[in-house]
Image (cartoon, rainbow, N blue to C red; front, side, top):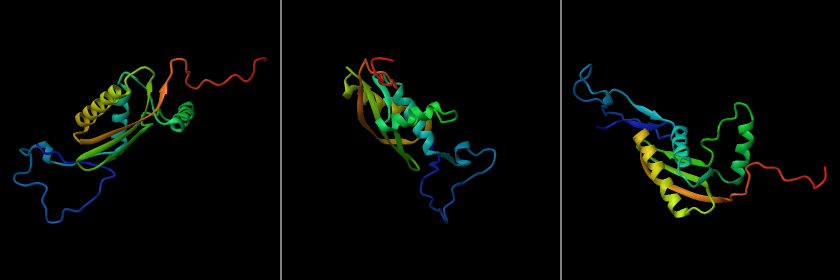
Length: 160
């Protein structure tokens, strides 16, 4: 079964002289030959971000500045949930590549967590979109220590 899947940002080449439908048309024609499915880059990025966050040992996604801006953006009404923070994708007609910036929990095996993230992201993206994931690159930007608080402000002084 061949499904025509493309992304919004993909190269647009005109297929002059090539007929997409051959043979019978109408009610008896298989549904997969009756149109084209387009998947936006943002959809693939959301799927990859959610799949990466599901893996035990992942504390957060995004590099330091991206996390700081994301935390501010989440406080603004309508600012978005930041699902795609730390996720970059390239989507072609049949393939996708994913780059992830992650923060892992202290004490976990980074090699094992990276392998689990890679497996989960590939599985989710391929299952949900039908695109072949050619690579998932993971950059570990930080290690979250147990005593670190997200967004905590330092004490202004000893006496108030």
